[in-house]
Image (cartoon, rainbow, N blue to C red):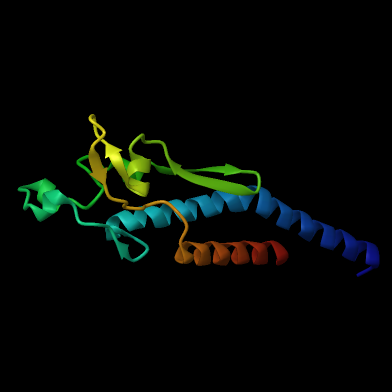
Length: 148
């Protein structure tokens, strides 16, 4: 291989990695994060940290309400609302529901009279397990780009 050929080869690899970082990885990482956050709903916690139990189950509600998972509600809209928006070089994971932040962060200011306390039941955010999964995905995708 001549120096010009090698130089073009390296340039192609560099371009593939830039494309991965700017375009492909934000989408793939967004998918990964959304999937992991939705799995937390099934586990009723945030990466192994259990959510505070809900009153309806503590008080022994009858029927479906007494058995339903925390934060799923009768519709399951909160879990399904988690989505991502890819940008050039990064991704934002979010929910567009107006009550999502109150549940994710907790509040003492909920309800019509603003005197209802909602404990924090985080379902979106940073966690070492998520970071490790993202780092693994980045390594895999860059390795693929290098091996092309």
